[in-house]
Image 1 (cartoon, rainbow over the protein chains, first blue to last red):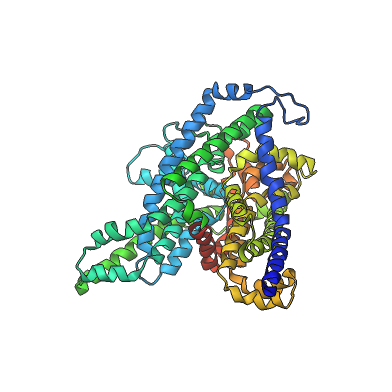
Image 2 (image 1 turned 90 degrees about the vertical axis):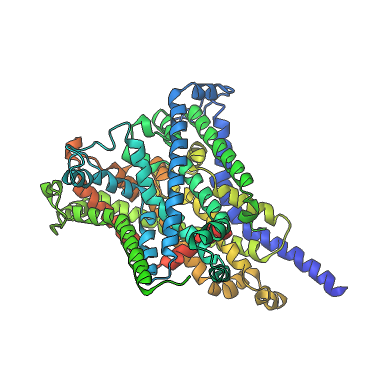
Length: 302
Length: 279
């Protein structure tokens, strides 16, 4: 009895400790995330301007009407969704292929893993600049090599041609973020039990069959989580388009659109409405994705 | 499956061939960046695969006080974010990883949800907050704003790590009446080395590379961080674009990250996968 009472007292004390230790982090996250998010939603119903954010009046849904009547907004929504679907699909397929390759038991594997990490770890701005230079229409190495091979006669304007700029941005994004996919899928591959493969080999199951019947289904949850992280990242893409093709409407993403309205046009109301719409769009995509793939258990670890 | 000796050799050659293709695809752009940065003046416009080893571009960019200043700014921001986010996260992870209390699960969910917020959704509210705190156009604005993507992630990874440690290790200390602060400092901190290195490295990389907030909350050149400095380098016309200088600046910014990636590969990968696979 007595120890029980002590235990309860101790637990209450421990719970107080827990809240005390959590308080600084909760306070910081409230100030940096929850409060700003709430204010963004609030500003989306006002006529505030960035120069004087304190002076505003509520104007109901007017900002949203302005936003939804802007063809450029819808174009940036289409651009973002197209970019996300195509780039994440390619990155998943390529990432799976490279992960399977690096999973082979060969010397040099550790070196390859370090190599593959590099494009992911450097600033996107640097990658964009690097590719911009390689893709330069007159002096770029890509056009030079294509000319040497006799594929083209004169340099292609990779980032200025409206039909090419989106595929180019997707290709650069694939170069930047496939490593992330590879590493996550590789981690999943290394958690697979070796014994089932030994059993399958003894039973004479072909390697292709082992891949489709064992590896893929067992790997599916790891791939699904990796894809979710990439989806969230791709839907808010900003830097790559901004540097590679800053003013092109063909590659304008929703993040670029919202920042442009907010900072360049100083229109805090419409800019916030765009931000709020992006937030809801990403929340809906995430909710659908997590439900469809039943990821809630895996994500929360319960 | 039984394979003949020649079959095995072919298999090995094929795999090393593919290794080479992947390495070339991954590394050639870096080679080209460094090679271009080492060509001087007009030589950059001739496509030659071997560099000249001329350091004019580096001299130009390093004698430019603004670029050096932005390097220092990036270093200050990244180091402060690492220190602050780890300090806060260690305390929070102790509470979430070692103490059972009501409200634990909702708080874990809250941190997970916050880590998924798109940055753009916070921009106008954060702008107001940063102005209100008097941080606009200071490095403090970035240190503060970067908490949004470093803190929830660090808390999540460190909590998973703390929870994986056996129950008994602190029980004696609790019974002896040690303060929680002492328990964290003397029992947990020494065991957390690898987890702290992983989360610290990832926080450093993310802060060093961030662009959207750095572009928006900093107004003047002397307070900029390197990604923005590199993005804003421009020539007087399209044909005078200073690619040599841009490639030199990019190389300087990238080298520390490449060294980190090669030296601490294991820690970075384990941090990434701990964040994504387990949590």
